[in-house]
Length: 313
Image (cartoon, rainbow, N blue to C red; front, side):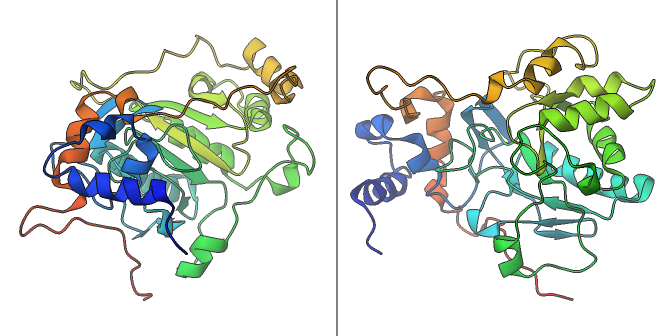
């Protein structure tokens, strides 16, 4: 298929970043630039900007296979993140197996090699601090490349509903997994479907402090989304507002369980303009440095760890 003119322009701009950023690039869609670079910025690791408007330097790749996890959707090249995020995933996978009996994690998207806006799928995941983890336990075999691309994550919703959970689909040990995921101090929030939050509130018993980190949000019925805090000492990383006190099982959850969040917006009298796309100029200035650094080409003698499939054992 022939590349569109915008795609060709984005490739040209990304290649030219090694020697200097053209003035016109700052008016280019950020997702076009960040999605064209296959390797990380060879800089000290840091999260820059906000979760939904930022980038990441010095990202590393989650190995596609580990003793207690398997990465999915490898063709997207989105299993990159801050070293703290990779360490968190590996720790959660290990602890959930050894302490809770969870078979292992199926890991969805982290972020792009240099973060930034993606061409599809996520508004956040831009600073190397977010990861999606499927609700399906890892099978007792290695999935093929084709299975990792085509297997769909399993929803817990009753068909045709937005928040009603089919408890026959609820994986055994799922509460323990989410409690474990929320237990680490570096976790900022974990997003789940409002119906999942409701079940957790009903079944948590007296140990409820961890529920504060479990936040209801649209969709998230087939995976949970973990967000880490900004790493200590990184002033350029913009923290999210703190969650309200309490377990989050009150008014906020009641709102999310109502029809209101899922109602389509009223149709305007005249068509509304399309949402404004994020341009490179909308991101922190340091993201230009991230794009320039090597322009996706590693320094001489260095091979960036681009994720690849490991041969089956």
